[in-house]
Amino acid sequence: MAESGREEKLIEAFVALIDTLVDTYDVIDLLHTLLEECTELLPVDAGGILLLDATGGLQSVSSTSEKIELVEVLQLDAGSGPCVDAFNTGEPVVVQNIAETGARWPEFRLAALSSGFHSVHAVPMRLRGETIGAMNLFNRRPGRLTERDAALAQALAAAATIGILQERNTRESSVVTAQLQRALDSRIIIEQAKGVLAASGTIGVDEAFSAMRAHARNTNASIRTVAAQIVDRTLEINAFAPSRLRPTTAGGLGDADDSQTGGGSSENLQA
Image (tube, rainbow, N blue to C red; front, side, top):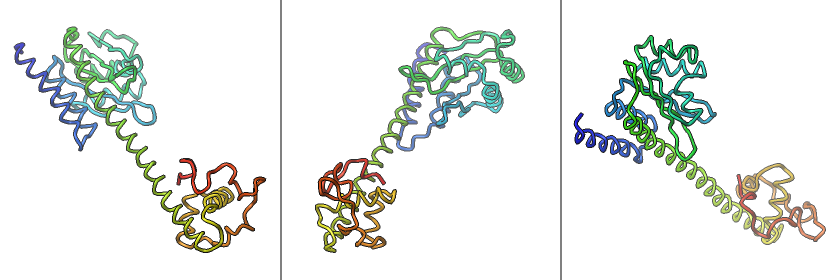
């Protein structure tokens, strides 16, 4: 490939990866694009990717053929192979001739040779010390990538890694946001319950939160649950009469000594 044509294809490859990072982002689409671009730009015949799952194990998530999928699965079953080593060490693993690996990875060697592959370049998917997977690039001929091609493979893998980590961080932020929103929603219910207690004349509005908190602890329930039961009248209001609540040494209501009147910490607002 001419130098100008290769540079143009390289730009297109990074654009293709970036295009997968949209609102409808799909990690499988991203990884498949990564393999497509690598096999198009580099002198390799096939590729596969192992990715770290939520349990801390590696999973085969993308491959260019069923043969590669089988090789990757056998690596995982055996717990050894160039891709597994690249993940464990965070460093590239180059095998110029798979037939000469001897007893190092017997299952991988047999599977790769049986599928017609004779060399492999395994690239860790790593960013700032965090490795999330590895990519295997196979060739039907013995040999190795040039330093330039190896660097390009690593750069493309890094681009995909950035996308995956960014998506994960966004998802985790969304979880935190949802938890905060639930806490805010809980506060609304709690304020309503305080109003119900005050309107019943059973307890003053200033003491209502401490009363609900004490009842929640005594019944192993959340404050949100107690508040909701007060609002929908499934909990007897007289349960919050001063005579039913344990006084503290300070003369307040049960458990009021470690809470603020009419308020509470984020822990208290959890459902």
